[in-house]
Image 1: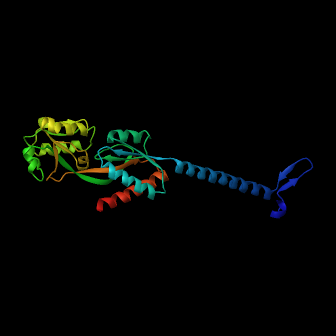
Image 2 (image 1 turned 180 degrees about the horizontal axis):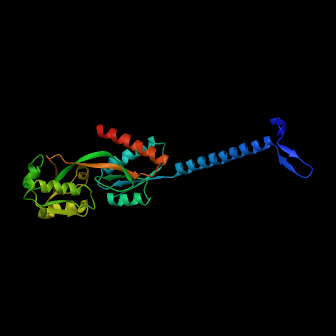
Image 3 (image 1 turned 135 degrees about the horizontal axis):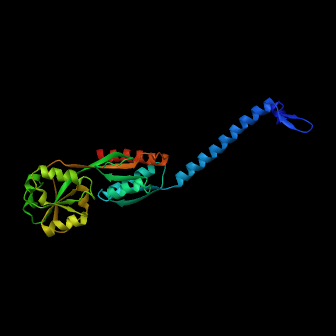
Length: 258
């Protein structure tokens, strides 16, 4: 090595070997190079582990799941072919799973406030009315809120749909008394209440994919928009997550405009 460097690195004494000034410089720089090589190997291995891991995605049960799953698949293909596994649950359960690190990203219903969770709205949808098939209002092309003052109203509880608080405030403002408003524990219960109790159900438009005999779905004349957003832990800066999130936002916005 000394011949190749054309410099003496060691001072060879009868009973000892010492580094020359050139040797000390070489040792210092070689140590740095070795440290950088170890760091490079570690980073590459870390990136490979991250790429091999699946992104855990949560989807709100209240969303339009068929179109949302198609959107997730489109984003997955665009985001470096990341592997994705997803579950469906209500927003409250999805937020809990995000906080505990069991999910990397979730599509949730708004409004929500949760410390440490970042949000980006991607979709909005209207509220629709669900009527018994033989209800006097069933012949109307659309329903106005003031027409429901004498009706029993059923909608999802706040534990299931975060927007229910806003819906209830809207109903009270329209003159519908609190005693006429009943929260349902889930969508099935809401749809069952309509023909059995002859109530009017209110739910997100995409939930209309759940068909029931003897009920009709009618749009509301009053403009009521409920939003859906992407949620993730703000501290999660995984390149895989960020790539998938950005793709989901991009394709989500395109689908909204089309």
